[in-house]
Image 1 (tube, rainbow, N blue to C red):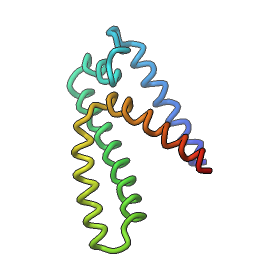
Image 2 (image 1 turned 30 degrees about the vertical axis):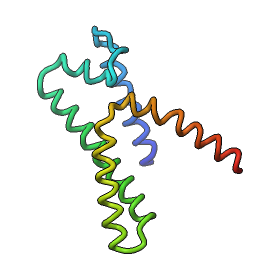
Image 3 (image 1 turned 180 degrees about the vertical axis):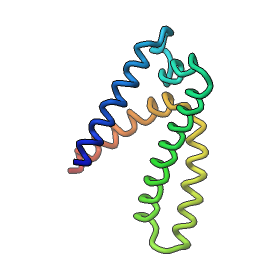
Image 4 (image 1 turned 90 degrees about the vertical axis):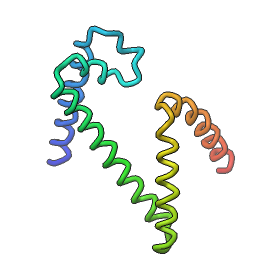
Length: 121
């Protein structure tokens, strides 16, 4: 029951975003995040609300992924702290790279790693 409700909410939100993108009269194909270009046309409430929602979703995803990684890779409290510091510094460094540049860099690297994995299997 709950999964069906989640599906319906995601479906409605997806159509709402799609409809919002269709209403945009600017060239959204050149933008890295087209929805931001559309939201900029509306008043400050929509911009602030969208930024808050995106920020919260990024934060929750990063925290859950980071906690899972730290719990799997750390065997004691000291190692947990050192891994946390290393991960935080790496996150600050990586966050300075534009998203499209980061994807263009990682896509071939992950492809090569996947090919190596296939060969090793």
